[in-house]
Length: 321
Ligand code: ADP
Ligand code: MG
Image (cartoon, rainbow, N blue to C red; front, side, top):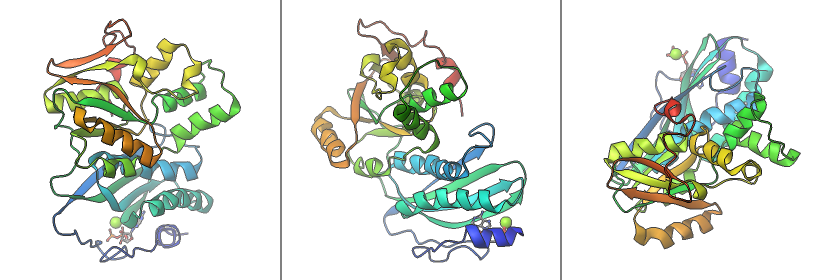
């Protein structure tokens, strides 16, 4: 199989929305009037972001999911993406499963594969995703305001627990169904695109949690020149994490990466609206703290003691990519 056969067979999907799909020197997209084009790139490298021998269907899903998560965090509607692939070999079974995993997720979001590049090399997946957001309505990191509530969707720390179990670093004993569930949280994350769209005009600031809540929240705090107090006991924990001692579960929730939930701030008068959005989308949205004028992040226990400095991994994950 040649490179061109592989592209034609696995990566040529219908592109009804694009003005011109793949096959030419560049794809063409029409940006609707009064909309901004939101653009984000994320690269996944075998051995660093996923295990090289992982299920290719899951790799395909996750590579696109982490990119869609960035669009969700901007409040953008996914439109299309490009796929840059370095492959050690052209292996039909692997390519077919990889493409199917990616395509299923792409279709469910109306996100078309409009082009890419394919080369031989160590397994690396680079995706650039494109979306639309009405001008002025994007959810940015630098718009948090003093007094805002801080919210997070879903639950935190599940992917970290799955990773630790896989690496033999946790002795947590989970029932099989919960074991499968945390594995799925790590291998097949769900980008919170509908939530990002619903938060347009509601949230002040937003981002997705990819490197861990504490480090990621610091990005919002710094960009917005504010501080925050977060209540550790309010961090949303799945049934699986609630089986662990509270302190380790909370540490995982505060530091664990790969969650792909949305972290956002919204003014107090929006509380009812945020609850309605959660009910409408059938997801959990949990208030975890407050934006304050005093700089820095305080991770408070139920006695009001700040654990931010002591929390293992906190510094390590700050600025981690
Ligand atoms: P060029 O040499 O002009 O860069 P390529 O031979 O790299 O062209 O690609 C030919 C066409 O196939 C282009 O339209 C490109 O967008 C598309 N393409 C290449 N690799 C991929 C891929 N992995 N997924 C989707 N489309 C691809
Ligand atoms: Mg090329």
